[in-house]
Length: 85
Image (cartoon, rainbow, N blue to C red; front, side):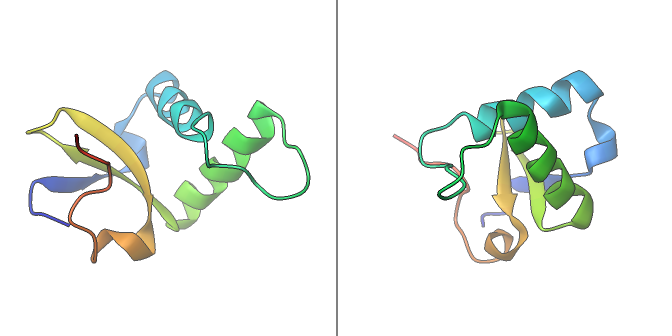
């Protein structure tokens, strides 16, 4: 990951901002959770648990003005957590 992406602590976001970021993430196509259908609230709860456990990170690029959620294991190896046009 390039140096312009920084990890943002979960506690640094207000609850509405955190929930909005999580909801934006879980509503993307390709974020299905397997054979069982999960409600939005369940998906948000599952991602929040992963954030609290450190398995998912909030990263932010000041240059792009973008915050994203990424798996912790991807933080060190990726150039960018988002697809750029």
